Amino acid sequence: MLYKKLLLSFTIILLLLIAFTGCSSSNSIDNSKNIIATTSQNNANSQNNANSQNNANSQNNANSQNNANSQNNANSQNNSNNQNSANNSNNSNNTNESILQNDIFIVKNSIYSNYTNKTMGQAIQSMMDSPDWEAFVGDDGNQYVQVGGYVSYNNKSTIAILQYVMLQQNTYMIYAFYVDGVIQNQSTINQFLQAAYSY
Image (cartoon, rainbow, N blue to C red; front, side, top):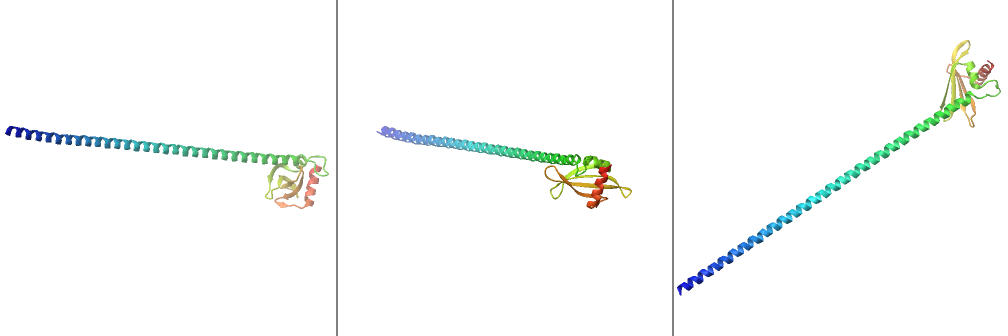
């Protein structure tokens, strides 16, 4: 009888011990699962964060590349515009220079008024020593041709300048005549021209 009681008590204790050990093991397994799940979640979050960061970096790099390309395109456009402006300016200068040179040609090769025996250029050449021809646009916007050189005036060599203003249809008129920087009247101009065409 006593033996049966001891055996029964031992069996109960053994069952309790097994049950307690089983619960602890189950809790340990569940905790391990929780740790693994947490670790996996953390790894997933880390991976997502890393991917997000990589995507953000890629986006930033793409934006930086786009900005750099836009800047390069803008610089190229500006350089192209500047080059076009420079070319247009050069073309305009060349055109103006060509027109002014043509003005000189017109005056030098013209027959003036009633003096038909020689051209204006030939008359000036016979009256002036080393005449220098030039053309320019005045402050008033008109085109002028002038010739300057040494002439004999009052028995001495002095500098004379004769200016012409260009009119329409390749015509001109005498605008002014200077001797030693002093503007002369129409009578002096007429005397000068008569002398020039008489030689």
